[in-house]
Every structure is written in C-alpha cells, then in structure tokens.
Length: 158
Length: 404
Image: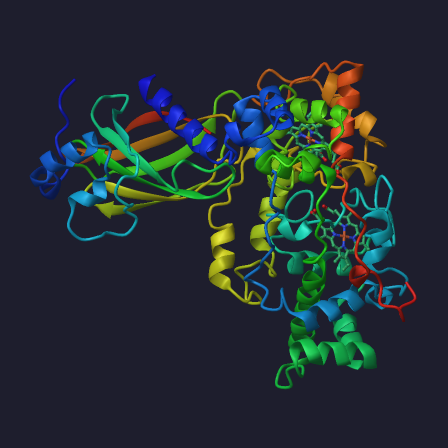
C-alpha cells in the first residue's frame, strides 16, 4: 500500500508531530495551536487511519462523547488523507445483523484541511454497528468528468 | 479485527467503572446477584435507573405552575369537544393509568389506534404511535380537532377559554391578557397553541414514581439488602431474560424501557404494512405546529430535533416502541390493541406464529421467536409486573369542582 499523500500543505508541515501524538493516543487537535470548531479535547481516543476500499484515501475519526452512548446523539470528527480532490462525504450507521441503519441522516460539514465534522449521529440500539463513510469526487477528463466513489467501513460495538 | 477488539475493551472498561459498587465491599446477597448476571446484562439493568427530568425548550410554560393549573382544568374539560361530552380524560383516564381499557379508542367515532398511556409521555422523543408530533403541546392540538376524537375546533376552544370565567382566570394567570392587535383568526390560533402548551405543562407531571424493580436496581448500585429484596425471585429471572437472552432490551432499554424509536414487531396483519413511521415523518416535517414553526418558543431547538430525520421505505410497518412502566395495568396492547393481555403479547414474542410471512427481500431480522417455555413466560410476566408504580397523585386528578 502506498503511503497516503497529505491533502494540504498545512497538514504536511505538521505531519510528523501529529503522527507522534497519535501514537501516544492523543488528539489531532493538539497539533494545531489554536482551537478549531469541532475538535476535541486532548487525550480523546481516535480510531486510527484506515484505508478506503480503493486504498486511495485514509480515514480516521473520533467521537464526542467517547465512548459512544447508546441512544443519545453524538458527533464525530473525521480526517481524510489522500489525493487532493473536492470530496463529498456521506456518513451513515448500519447494523448488519439487523439489516437496518440509523433513524437519522447526519450532516457532514467540511472544516478544511481534510477534516470534517459529522453532526446528528445516533445509535439507537445496542450491538454491532458499522460506521460507513462514503467518499465521492469529480475527476476531470479533458472537457468531461466522471464521479468517482470510494468508501471505508469501521466496526463499532455499542 | 484489532481495532474493534481494543475499542470493545475500552467500552467494557468504561461500563465497569460505572458499576459503582466494588465487589469486595458488598454483602453475600449482592455477590450472588452479581454472579447471576453477565457484565452486559448488569450494565443494561443499571441503565434503567434515574428517569430524566422532562423539559421542552419549545414550550416556555412547560415548567410553569399557572400553566399547569390551566392545563389540568383543560385536560378534564369536555367543552373542548364538538359535542361537549369528551375530554382528554375520556380516553386517558387517570383511574385507568391514563388509558381507556379499550382495544381501539372511541371518541365521536371509533379511531383506528389504541390509546397509549400518558405515563412519562413528556419523556417521549416523538408523540403518537407513528411519531408525527415532536412535542406534547403540538400533540395535544390534534385530538381536539380530530373529527373522530373530540371534533372541536380552535375558534371555539379559544372563545371558551377567553370567555368562561374560570378558564379565563386561569388563562390570565398563565399567559396574561390575550393579544388585542391580532385578527380573530390569529388570536384563535395563538390561544389554541397556548391551550396545547398548558396541557403539556399538565402532562409533563404525569411521571411514574419508583417501582419495586427500581428499588432493586438501586440495591444493585448500593448493595442495600432491603432494596435487593424488593424484587421477587421470579421477576429477577424475568429481568435476566429481558436484559439478556430474550433480547427485549434491544428495543426496550433505558429508564423508560423504550428506545423511543420505531420498529416492526411483526404483528398479525393482512396485506402490505401500513405507512406507519414513514407517513409519521412526513406529517411531522409539515406540521405547522412543529418545534421549528412560528409557534415554537425556541425555533433553534426545534430545528435541531428535526434536522437529521430521515424518511425511508423500511419505516413502513414501524411503530413507536412504547415504554413499559405500568404496562401490567394498561391492557390491551400494541398500536392496534391486538393483544388483550400480557400473556398474549409474550406468546407472540415467543412463537411469532401469528406474524405475517417474511418475504425474502425483507432485511429486517431484529426479532427472533424467543421459544420461551412456560416458566420463562411466567418469569417475563413477573418482571413486567414489577414495573408498576403507585397511582397518580391527587394533584393530577380532576379539580374538585369539575364534573368529569
């Protein structure tokens, strides 16, 4: 697997200390000096970078609150590393053993630098959930374009 | 998967921390109980403790005493109905745990739904079996004008409240003088909404008190032997089934024993499933009295409630999971009153023999036939019976001078 390219300049400059901190289990937020909206406290567990199906992107996330409470709203912040593109993200929860998803459609807000805030998450039942992240972007082919899609699934036990 | 494993450990550790009691300090009775339940069952039991305090930012007078007094009078007021003979209490009778004992409600005509109890309805996330209202105040407006329920209308309700001397006095205490500058139509609508908000202030206090089961759970937290003895052994076996093997807790969890969301429990039916929650979401979003509408006292909070709602085809046939507190006293059961007793409900969950045939494309597999034997059925029933709390306090009963 190719090491992912960082999405932005800023991220590349701060790449090393960020990764170190991750190893320590600390939070992404502590890498950048000032506080950005939706970035969580130090020491919050982060689900480590995981490759998307096509291996093009790497995604990691943290929930607020942690651990994810049963049947109470929570938020997540997602980081996406990979080729520069105007990504559209969709996030959903799914219970494979029950064949149903969440009772809500969460809202994804880009925060810049490959970071996204996801509001309106709710896991209303106990059990095995999948946090499904779908990525889509436009690839320009001369005077036309195609929509590319990719995804990554995280298993979460509630 | 490594990631999953490590997170599970974290989650369990978090759960253990909240088990409260350190096993070394507890008595033998507690030790024996602790050994009887798995970690997960134990955590689920403890999650039923502490009924939250209700609140509703979209209703300024939700906690107001004057609004409560007006709401109490209105709840028992038959003149809200078209024929002057039906009040909210005609169907939600406090002497019958705020329900009517009928399979299907009967107002001016028979309604196609069973009357739910109002115990703890202030804690519901959504009101009605299909969740088509997002607050108690917006809910209350619907039965008043429903042609089969009370068959009243907002103009006459507003007129009654503003002209009847007793109601008017209560109204003025709660809301002050009615707006003068508005047209008759707008005044009627405003007062109608205030009627809903006052009714909600009343219903907000219809909360269950502690039950033998709650005392038992409190004992699990403190180790108090007297509390631990509050639940009889059969009900303890039932609780273990409910929060374990039988899987009831999947939908009936937390302090209300409800996830406050919607499921299809495969009740007998003919033909395709009803639109149920699917239609409910549509009606909720277009309800002029929803929390983000002009009559809301906190549009932002109302928006937040509705912001992430989705509407999908699989919501057909899905009805709200009812809370189970006082369930032993609120027969018949289900949105259509199809079961006359808890025995019939449990028989359904045990065999699913009356369930409609499952199609191959149907992905829903939450419910499995429990195949309970006779003693398990008895145990589950004993557990459900342990969820009964004392009857409503007198402050919730009709005011003494009322004739209802």
